[in-house]
Structure formats: C-alpha cells, structure tokens
Length: 334
Image 1: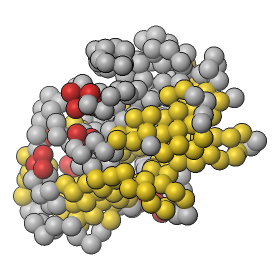
Image 2: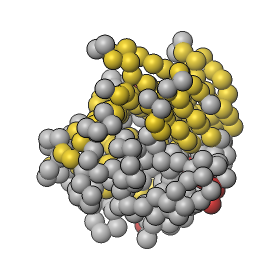
Image 3: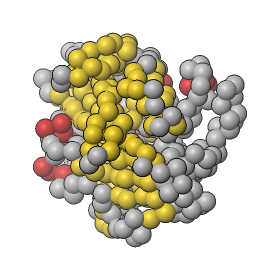
C-alpha cells in the first residue's frame, strides 16, 4: 500500500498490478473488491486491471503479416479477442510491489514476464508498471496525484516482432452513490473511431455528436463505449509516447460530492465507457455492482491497430525497441 496522507491513499495488488483503492478526501473513487481473492473469480469487468498484451479488441482474434505469418489469438468477445484474451495481463500475477525511486520520487514497481505464445501472441516480453503517488499544490488546491508509467521490451529470441498495448481499466465513481448519475464530463476531443457491430473500427475518424462540450450523465444516457482520438495523424506517433507532453483526456466533476478527477496521458486515444454491462453480484465485503456503477477512461492506441497497416506503427514492437506510455490521474475535493 502506498499512502500520501490519512485522507488520500492507494492500494495496489500483484494480480494485474491492479489499482484496488484510490482514495480522495476519505472516499474510494474506484470500483473494487475488498478481498483480493474475488479478483480471481468475479472480475469480469476488469476492475482496476492492467490490460495487455494488447488493449481493446483485435479483429477476428487474429493478427496477420507478423513475422511473415499469421497468429491466431483466443477469442473472448464474439469473434474478437478483447483485452489480451481471457488470460490477459490483468489476470496474471505480477512480481511486486517493489519500492523504488522513480524520477526522484518514491514509488512502486510491478513486473511481469509474458512468454512466447501466451494467449497466442508471439515473442517473450517483459512489462514494467510504475506507480508514483503524491500530493501536489495547484492553483491553491491540494490534489492527489497518481503517475502511472508502462514499459514493454522484447526479451526473448523466438521471433523479431510482436504487438503491444497497455492501459489501466479502473472504473471511476465520484458520486458517493451506486451509480455515476449526475457526473459532469468534459472530454479532450470529440473525434472518435466509428465501429461495426462487433466493436471494430471501420477506418474513419469523425466527430461524436454531443461530446464536443461538457455533458452530464443521467441514469441511462448517454451510453458510450467508444475510442476517442486525441491525435488523428497516426503516422507521427512514436512507439514510446512518454517523450510527448501530457494531454488532458477527460475531466469529471460531481456537484454534490464536490469531487474532481482529471485523466492526463501521453497516449493518442482513449476508450470512454459508461459501464452499461457491469454485472457483479454481492460478495463478502462488497455490494453488488450493476450498469453504470462506474465509468472508464482507458488511455491507449487505436483499436485493432495491429491489423490496420496505416496504424500498425503505434503498436509494433521489435527487438531492441521500447514500447512506453504515461498516464497521470489528478483528484481533489473542492
């Protein structure tokens, strides 16, 4: 556990380098399980998990033209592979947490060795996840900050290249109630990837109606589960985005709790999901969670980038290269 004060603390778990708690002014703002064992048995929504070896959906659970051949992945979302497959990184036990000094700050490090052939993906890679928690003063306000860094390298000799995508799948709820109703949302872009009936982009980038200005989540609307695009020129994206400036992807505010949350990232896109399909029964220490009990802001590369030639550069990892990303969460109470 990493704690920055009595009123703001974080808890992380070895399974999936999960963010189990994110407390602001004494309130946990992420959906979780009180007992870690339930992440093994009841976490169909991916609460708090580190997602990999790729994020989101891969069309047809297949990657073509990689190392001169095709690779069949495990389908777990209709015809597609979702979040690295049923045994993706969020379901795996990482080594850690290990106390480290990261860029002059105290933090924790989790590592995982993903072997060649795991869930169908080629090549052995090592993923490293750093969490650095702190309090920061901005504009006279003390903010609880969590810096997250991801790094992936090929460490095996089985092949020359693979594909990678990593994010965190926390569900945020700043309302103090069982749903996200009443949350005010501002997104950093209204550009998104239109999808087919199975959740695969059709290749276009266009405007999402209703998100160009701040909006309020009601009991059922808007119902969103789409990939929003911060950078529309895929050809200019580096494999390691940490060299780029952080951009504000989303800001949340609730007028009753007075809680705020900002999600900043170096990543070119993010999945915004309002939690329609959450269905978790009550378990020891934790009440049932249903639709819209939390929302996700998942910084990432484009969906199915591995199978789109014009997008593949953002996820194709070769020997000697490093895939990297950084996301910063800032939360405070007014």
